Length: 412
Image 1: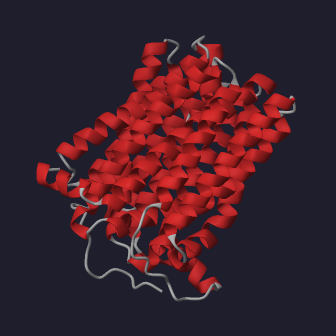
Image 2: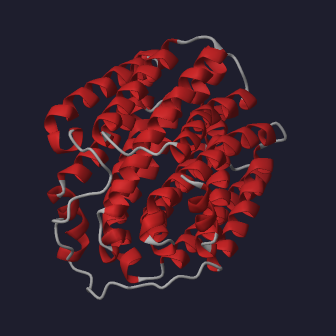
């Protein structure tokens, strides 16, 4: 991204406000996830329960994401995003109260996981669909890459800060999260943009229009489903508390570093992509990045040395960032504005399935055969998916540039 392009992007005040709000919200969310995972493992010492936390976040996200996409196309996306941040702040305060009163038990963590999953269902389509409304079209690829840079910085700082604060107790993390989320909510409410609401009433056809659009557009279908299966199989996030305590023999601070390591790699890659954007052979590079993600996951699964584990996780983050930037740019550039909420909702289902179901899958396999088998088998499966998608989605594999064809499926 050239210097004039950078200065032009910073001149978009609404985008910068939203970027800062997302930065604070993601930082708080990452801190919250570290604290909840460590809190649960402290209570139960169960890999199965860690997996259930992911499953209970996924179920409401799966059930409500498509209606949430319709809501994002009908109503002010910034206000939806702000409301979601406020609900997460309330969850953090409930956890503070429960910890002080001594009833922060397994069942409560399961309950707040459901609430967080429901919140995510409405947050993801709104935040993904909002960015194209805040910048002119020629700045969109740069805005996506710049957003990814900020998000990865938050994903680095959030877990690390959460791990440090946890040494003073879970409430130190929960209280800090609540403050950050409220501030991010207020910042989001200051975002102004011209909202063009969809005039279609809620119906089965309008709710499913995003699914139909993605299904008809094989490049988007291939990219989104590739991410789903790669992270579903290759995600080791749910097992990091086990690796931190039982395999790598470190504490909450080490867990925070492990959670941050993928984001360190992703941040470095984001900076590389800002300087040298991906312009040609985007399909091949996407598939290669997913294969590298799987290989690095295998290395992490077999490691019993903390530094090797950190390096392997950093490589997974760098590879995943290439996938995210390509996929999100394709998604935003090739979707009409009045469809972006619903298409983003479909993408959110893929992301939610890969993250939350991936955590459940990892926890379930680890409970049966151990964490090492769970992580290594998932990495091998990810490499197999990358190879299979090259044949199943030739339009994606042969895609040369991010700019798409003119004859896209029509919006509904």
